[in-house]
Length: 122
Image (cartoon, rainbow, N blue to C red; front, side, top):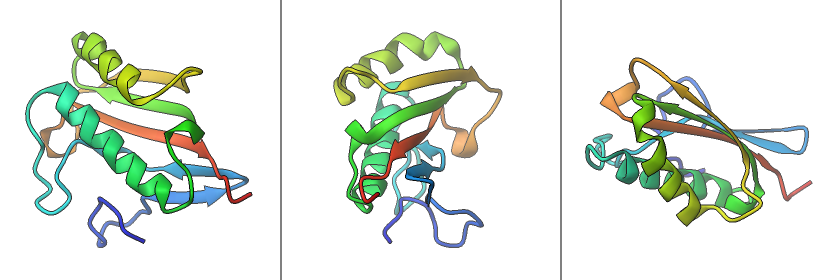
């Protein structure tokens, strides 16, 4: 399956189990170069959600199937900008969500998002 992650990484972009799809954390990077799309947390969040959509589509799912998200932010001051992007991309009822402030993310990213979605194939 196509993945925004390099094939040589020792984990799956998505693991189906028990009627759910468990997606690994996605960053706001360009898949070909692994470079961030920019410094803005909003741009990075948009790109991370784009990656999530690509992976979900491979299982016949979309963002409406997402039931839980964990968001890792370098700075919780980015919370409002993240919420703007979230409301543009997700519809009510919004998925449950947890946000955690972290010291560092891969590639120097400002945000990483992982999700759990219902597997529509079940």
